[in-house]
Every structure is written in structure tokens, then in C-alpha cells.
Length: 249
Image 1 (cartoon, rainbow, N blue to C red):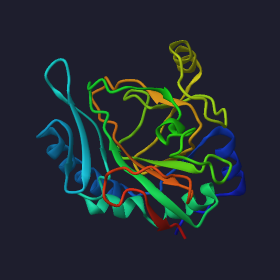
Image 2: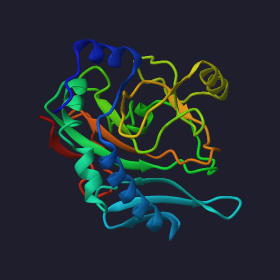
Image 3: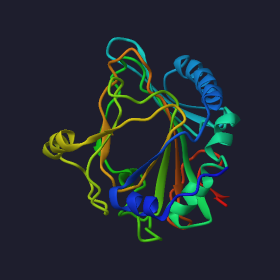
């Protein structure tokens, strides 16, 4: 059955900028997604740079030691439809509807983020509002609460060893670039988010978050989907179907 958020959970999401929800997907379902991601990883490691393949966009770089690092794969559900099925699952859509306050949304991103053992992938502290182009003609806050939510699905356990997501303050507005001094401050006060496979984390556009490199021997992969309130986004992504308007309920 679809999970219905309590009023207090919606309030907490807007207050703190994030909300964890346990056990949305079964371990069997997570295994199906993990297998699909393994197939995508093989394709990614066969090339490098930015490239399109069967409707998905790959970002792969060669590191200083000659190995390859997958930054992310966008619109991964095009090459692996099973990932799109779970991204728009009936257990996810009502949550997005409640957090956005809308029965529809533009599905902007459908990504796999890879943090493989010792790949050194880091994400400095930032707001997702930056990537949505807040403050430009590409974005308008229609609902007055950011008009955007990321839904992060844990494929692997996210623990203290393999570089969990770190969440800091939620200023409830777009603040722009974060200086190096502020980066250090956020690292000191940030809290780790710990997830089990199949758990979901809803993340608002203003909460400041980041992560360090994964120097463990375990992967830390997540499936991320971003949904915008209708009319908020006017940016085009150059990927077929990215940004399409979908029903949430």
C-alpha cells in the first residue's frame, strides 16, 4: 500500500529540508535495481567522457591514476526501463505529491549516482537549488516552498564507512555559492544520513548537503529522481522525455 505521510512529517520536511522513510522497497526489488545498475555500469566503463546511449546520458572521467570514475548516469530509466518503473512507483508518487502540494509534477532527473570503493568521488556542500538554476529565467518558485523535491533511493547500505550523505542547515532560501570557509563550517556541523537498501530520503532544494569520498571497500549507489512543481522549470535538458509532466495521484 502507498505510504501516506503524516502532517507532522510534511512539516518536518519543510522545516529541516529532508525526510527519511524506511523500507519502501523490498530486498528483492532492490536486487532487481542493483542488477540493472550493474548492467549500466558495464556500459559506462566501456567508454569515457559525456555520451548518450539509448536515451541515457553518461558522465565518465578518467582519473589521475588511469582508472575510470562514473560521475552519474542521467535518465537511466531509458536504457533500463525497470529503473523508471520503480522511480515512478505508486509508493513514491503520493509522497512527492504531498511534499510538493500538487497532483502533477515535471520529472526532471532520473539518475544513478555512483560512489564506488576508493573512487574518490566527492560532492562539496551545496543546495540543489543551484542545479535547478534558482535566480535565473530557468526557474520560478511556484509553490513558495522551493517547488522541488529529490527522492533518493538507497541501493546499497549508506553507513558511516562508505561516505553517507551529510546534511547541514536549511536556510529555506537560495543562498548561492558556498565559500571554502563555509564548506569547513558545514563539514563540522553536518549530520550523516544513514539508510538501508530500499529506504528513501526526500530532499528539498534549499537544504545544504554534500559528501566525502568513499574510501571503504563497499559501494554506495543511489537512484535519484527529481520532481518539480508544474510551471517551476523552463530549462531544457537535451535528453528525450526529461522534464515530462506526470501524474502523481
